[in-house]
Image (cartoon, rainbow, N blue to C red):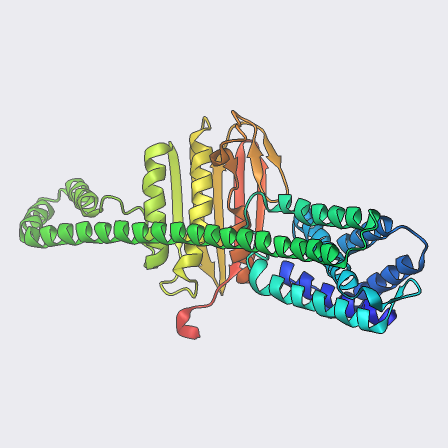
Length: 421
């Protein structure tokens, strides 16, 4: 029996690796926790208790095991319920299909082989087709409601057993039907989640194209002004020489300033030399200048940072959208951005004013000022989770704080130069 529990533990291990990111869990700690979990499961198996009580106990133990990994509690409860539910359905199906293998109230060795085979096949199908996208935290809002599917399936099995159904074909049909129903529903939901993720990625790419288009327009206008200045340069030099001969220094300074203003391109708020940052930030700053009162931005970065344009869009797109939306609803309408690079470290600091009280949940801030739960655009920090994921990709760190009406995001990322790769 212990060998069977070890085999089922392997199935559980495979399921959990499909649900959660296990890279950060230390192997030594992993082994110890799984050993304790196995001992607890073996203990509950030998204790005298009804099948529903054992099922609940095993589900609770598995839920405790999932605390070893990062993720929402609803997702962990879903994983525990699904794994235990599918295993119970496989066991019930095996019993009804091979009813004669039951000897003196206990299963024969052949039965354990069949049960493990069914569990293994269901796990492989589930991992391959039904929960490919659930490991990502960018999942559908109502994933947690899927917990009712394995629970209802389990209740159906308990009712089937409680009625002492001896019809092998009816029991097998119900058990197999519940297994197929779980697989089909999870497959459909997983496909919807994949489509949702692709839709979000498409929106990011669309904004990236818009920012490049905006930057191209800025460059074209700048080129046109440079050509105009070159054409009139001899006239400007003649005027400046005349002023210099007469010692009119203040007029020369004023004249040069007018030339500088004339050279500034409309829509070009920063020019760091990094095309990806300049294009995206100029697009966002153009919107901020129109909607806010005070906008300050200082960018000092190398031309070739080893960060993809896609990652820049996730970071600045989410942070700037949130900052502008919050600042425009405040009285001060303030936005401050500082981005600079030093010795392999990229520092990003974004500060904005806000109005109302902020309530922090698991991974976002909610503003109670005119808050409507049906309107997700009022959620301050929407997308923070995605930003944090990108920051961690570059072994960085992100801090969020709010004080005296100022919301601030500080990011440190370790980024190399493309030329040094």
